[in-house]
Length: 313
Image (cartoon, rainbow, N blue to C red):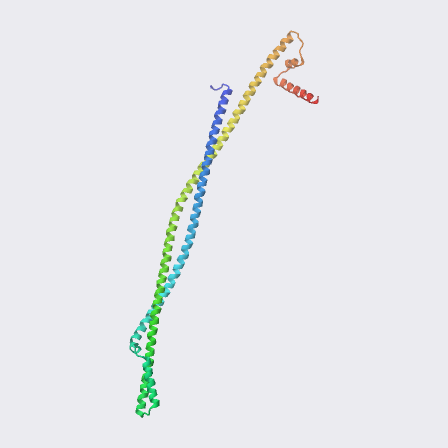
């Protein structure tokens, strides 16, 4: 179509059809993007929820680790105190061993035998007539035996205390071993927790860029949807303009037909007037009307009046 030529109805209809197809295609693309964004947002929500779960798990594991570290610290403190006590007991035990080594020969003596011998001497002293020399000898022997009895009993006491101290040291060492085992158990649990935290942290670190990538995609698609919306609005406005143009074109064409009919009828009335034939009121209106719209207005008024009269009847 050359520039300056009037636009035909066919051209307008073709443009309208093309615009409708473009609008349909744009809306389909927009709907497709909206559906894709809906899927991406659902995927991002899952990733965000998983990231939240991972952070909660890491937080819980770190709290467990903190408690275990406190327990290990307390066990190590108790173990240090126990080591100090063991060192003290070992020193005491060494001293008692040296004393026991000196007293061990005495401890082997029979306490009952010494007591019986003292009783025999006392009975002899009480029941027999003794010379002063014999009396002194018995008294000295009793004193010697009583001293020996006391030393023997002391030696036995030292050996008993030595045995008890050894038992105490064995118990303390067993307790020390128990502390070591408990510290080892908790240390192993801490190591397992550290490994679990490391694995969860790695998964969380992988999720963060995935979430960012989805967010970038969603933002890009949202911008594209906005552009499509603007483009659709522009095409819709263009479609409305073409539709109005088509309506105006069709209205002008109908008006042109009416003008031709009006001109033909007026020519017929003028011919009738030249022949001297009488004219009707409608023919006079047609003859003296200056514009087509005046006749249209009068025709409209007559139709309204006729309709009102019919309604009154």
